[in-house]
Image (cartoon, rainbow, N blue to C red):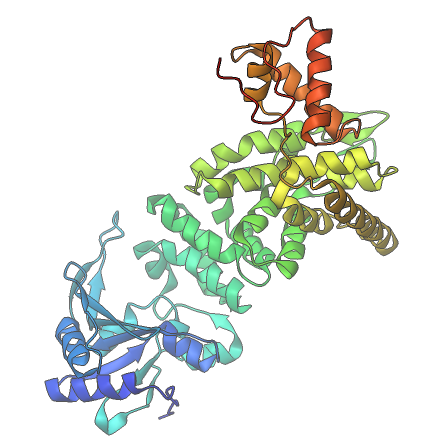
Length: 482
């Protein structure tokens, strides 16, 4: 039988010695073995023993020099310890059986063969012996090594049963295909299509976790095409499916926004590993189906899809159980602003337009520009080159204006509090109007964002509105405590 060279790390010898002392067989199994064969870095080790995994973990911890703490999960019969930056999980060999309407299996002790059979895919059903007489020997009962060489995702047992028992494995099959660039075995893919409705019994959190891993894969469009072809995408993200298709009226067609979105996502993925920038690519045109109109003269239009899309982002994040925090606000901002830099390349770029973009984008301007570059997906190479050169010009102007005006995360030096104290006002519409007018003047370059000049402008605005100065704060901090 084939042998595999385990990494030069003492943890493996320690586990082998502890298993020998307890008289149990132990094996490294699953994803660690797969990644070892594929030469992918991994420090998460799964150890299966034909016996009590918790007892083995405790014995290993006692033999390690620093006596690490063992975390025990009795409900699952597992234990975990850390050795430096290596994480080792121990479990006894098990066999599982499922009831029709449940994802929770009935578990009982089993043999190594039982344990391998319950694995999701052949490439994850590999083991390496840690036993004295066969140390380093590869256990490969389902030809997982052959499937790795063929770059195939295949289930060890009949795929229909595998996916019906645990429907999340359908997402995992596509996730592994997308991460590794593998094909899915035809029978396995047919079983995903046949069992797709079973995904409804899986929690949204677990589905989204797999979806995020697909999004973070090297070429995420591949994973999305598999989700679409299997019908899973229609169930887990129907709003994205609405982007698919081309409508033609009087010989005029619009582009297929589903495949355009996937191209933008791939383009972004070439320049950034940021999950939320990738989500911005996925959602940047999400409102196009809702805003699509046909005009005999103008052809197809999608007016306002950026603002409508930004308003849709919170609901979509809630439905997908994505975080409703600064990440959601970042995606929302980029969806709302994604046409702005494109508009700038079509016209003479004024300092005022650059200031407004910096003001609205703030620290997210770099991500926005990456998204906008990625959004140029024309098949006309000359047109793409011209647009990208124009983007270069816009980015140079952004740097110039940023350096001269310090407008990133710009806030007017005159706050609402200063306006209220100067004119003796309470929070009101008048305060908002004055602050907005001052902001406009600064962005237009009429007034510098410096206290004395901005304050004088604000006082003059107040006088025009019939607001007398009740406290002169021309010098900052000059609040009088009469």
